[in-house]
Amino acid sequence: MLKNIGLALIFATCVMNVYAQKSEPVKIDKSKTDNKIEITIGGKPFTTFLYPDSLEKPVLYPIRTADGIVVTRGFPLDPKPGDPTDHPHHIGLWFNFENLNGLDFWNNSYAIPKEKKSAYGWIRTDRILETKSGQVGVLRYHANWVNQQKEVILEETTRFEFSGTANQRVIDRVTTLTANIRAVFNDAKDGMLGLRLAHELQMPATEDQKFTDDKGNVTMVKAGTDKVANGNYLTSAGKTGNDAWSTRGVWCKVYGKMGADSVSIAIIDHPQNPNYPTFWHARGYGLFAANPLGEKIFTNGKSAKNLRLNKGESVTFRYRIVIDNGEKTTDVAALNKMAEEFAGK
Image (tube, rainbow, N blue to C red):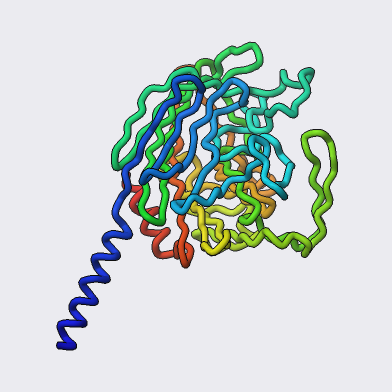
């Protein structure tokens, strides 16, 4: 009798585990009136692809866990009480770079004065190439990296794959950049895949911090006074906290408590990416970025990585973003397995 009960419990546990890992259907829904595409997983909102000309680049915003917790900062599009108002160009999840042919694509935002805009570049999405719903949702688009005269430097083709289970959401991003003219990515700190985290996933400040908003207002944050931030970083190389910044790793995750849930977001690099494994531009104030082309500043000038494309040449960047929520955050063994799987994709 006890044996039968034990077998039944094992069977029930296996069934529960299988159910927990069952993939949920993804729906990709393009707006008929606005430049946005809604992505839902398991019937629940996950994220929105935004590409209006009012933004200086396309973004995924906001991004949610499977339980609906928003893991991206609200400011500047939908500010939440207590949101930091620094770096108005940090919106959701994006991909661009600080120095392409001398133009700054990364720091461009509505806060740049008109007379200074000529030093900045835009990424303008002109075509949605594919939308497909299913167990894996697909979104492909074409965009142009342009100067203020709308002269094309690079053509971008990006493919997103979205998937999820009861406690996990996954974004696979593959971006190919093709030079329309000679294109030079001059080694710079700010790039390339960026994510701005919700307040809770920031690291607690261990020293006084000063932030300046888009209107020039200065905010001081005293160490120990922020009771919301509780995040931390961990890399595949074992670096934690502020020590993750400027180091290389196959993956990096940020994790913390959001409400009753433990939440983690991992970014996984791909072996075919330039300068693999990437450097992590992971800041305690909430910027979480992978930048393979910032070697000079990350190595204190010991080496540099300038990527050059002649007209017609291409480069491809591949990243996986994994968002988990539940009783515990994703452990090292699971992340290593995901990285191995992604490497073979």
